[in-house]
Image (cartoon, rainbow, N blue to C red; front, side, top):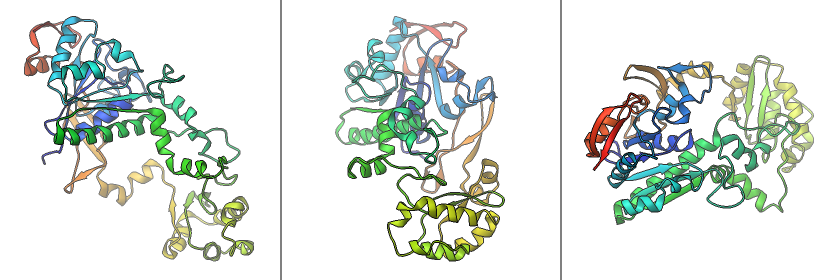
Amino acid sequence: MTLPLEGILVIDFSQFLSGPLCALKLADLGARVIKIERPGQGDLCRTLYLSDTEIGGTNSLFHAINRNKESFTADLRDDGDREMLRQLISQADVVMQNFRPGVIERQGFGYEACRAINSGIVYGSISGFGEDGPWVDLPGQDLLAQARSGLLWLTGSAGDPPTPMGLAAADMLAGNALAQGILAALVRKGRTGKGAHVQTSLLEALLDFQFEVLTTHLNDGGRLPQRSAVNGAHAYLGAPYGVYRTADGWLALAMTPSLERLAMLLGVSGLEGWYADKSAAMRDRDAIKAILAQALAGQPTAHWLAILQPADIWCAEVLDWPQLFASEAFRRLGMVQHIESAGISLDTLRGPIRLDGATLTSRRAAPDLGADRGQIIKEFGLGAVAPADGEGRSRSIAS
């Protein structure tokens, strides 16, 4: 299959998660991504461990987010390396970076400098908290962005402390937002030849993530959301919305067309006074959910699914990863792919998009540091090459 971004060249200065995630999405769609890394150390994500899991001497996180890319080592203090980078940018379609505002500009590879080299460049930037303001110089890190975004007050029940998501949500959302903006800018460039500077931040991505509930807040007299004290799952949704313990596990209950119908199916009483009151599901949600919780705890999850699903009550069993992986639904998606590349063998997930019925699978694992430097110098005519210095990089004589 010919992928839609084949022929697009991306020069990626970013590191850690947000920028590399954006580059991964572009690579999965067919773009050629050349990852710019520091000699000797490389992307700091190479040594940022989620656990003690290693793949070929590098942590699993780096492999997950940097497959389908090439590595080009460059010392930004070296005039020859800087000149080669300028030559690469002159032939590129996209340049990306996620440093704090001002850092890449001081290195001479900010948007204006790159546009001077290549007037049609699409330039993507991710910051922590925007390009100016009192937070501009603070670390743009996922948990810190979650903490400032208000998100931590939406998860959990009323008595719980501020609860972050168990994922790098800010990084992932910002990376996807930047990918969307870059794709839109490439479409415009294809029509007009005009480049663009696409910008987002971890904070903006998290605010956009909350746009539904923030719109309610902004138009509701500024009232703060109140998390349910019983089985909290969504601060703005009433009973029965939540996750309930059963006799052998957990059951998620979403919206239901009729509280009376649900009560009948569960065989519970005590809810009759709320049946005709449309506001009761929110106003008295904790009392309603407490009654439902007591009933649901009496039988196994499969028992309730067999009763509720045929009655069109929206519910689901709560699965852990092994249970999910064992399901036929997961198998049919074909989400896990096995990659054998350059001595690396790993299982990872494919991209979530299918094109013309085909899934997006990877051609190669994450690159060794500087593994592609010599070949890239030769291919792009970046200058005469001296012998490699033993750190995966070569000294060059700038042309």
